[in-house]
Each structure stands twice: as C-alpha cells, then as structure tokens.
Amino acid sequence: MAIIPAEKDFKVVRRSDFPLTLTIKDSTSSAVNLDGYTVTGEVYNEDRSTKYADWNVTYTNRSGGIVDIDLTDDQTTNFTPNILFYDIKLTQPNAKEFVYLRGKFFILEGYSS
Image (cartoon, rainbow, N blue to C red; front, side):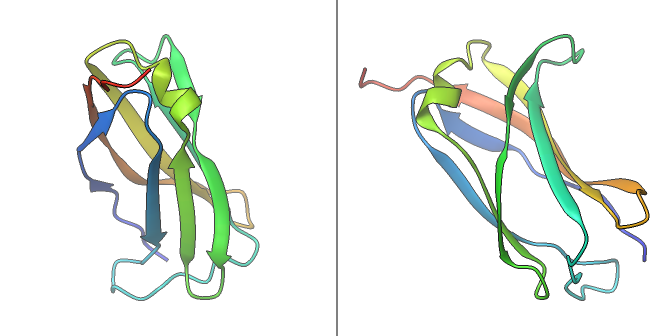
C-alpha cells in the first residue's frame, strides 16, 4: 500500500479545542482498513527541538479508515510561537511507518481566558 503524504495548513485559536475527523486513504483514494494500525501525531516547533502536544486519537471506524483527532484547549494554551508544525503518522501492523498528513499551524490569539 502506498501512502502519499498530504500537506494542509490550519489556523488554530490559542485556548480553544481543535478537532479533526480524518478518513485515511491510500494513493488510489480507497479507505485504508486501520485494523492493527496505530495513528499518532505531534505538534512541534520548526527545528523539532520542542514538542508542544501529542494529538489525541479516537478510532471512530477502523475498517472505514476513520479517526477523530483533536487537541484540547489546555494543549493549545501552550502554543506560544505564532507558527508551529504538526504531523500525523501511521504505523502499520508490520511496524512500517508513514507520515500521512503534515503542515503548519498559524496560531491566532484567543480572547477569552
């Protein structure tokens, strides 16, 4: 199975939840059966010297390739640089790892404390 990493940038409001639903697809646009897979992800600065958060992952429909990932308001409170980077990684049952999605977070200031 070939997975071509996608790139997508997002605006994230500091001190707010940031949820996403992903349907993991292969290079033929077919949903990947995620039985036995692990989905992980991190938020970090440009040179990866500081990790700001790990994505929370819920397997919504493994056979349909659907996962819900999110960052909580507590996590985004610590997003102090104006630009951060993230990735979402798939680990296959055979331990091969692939970056599925990556990009930048443009951090916007939240107005509520």
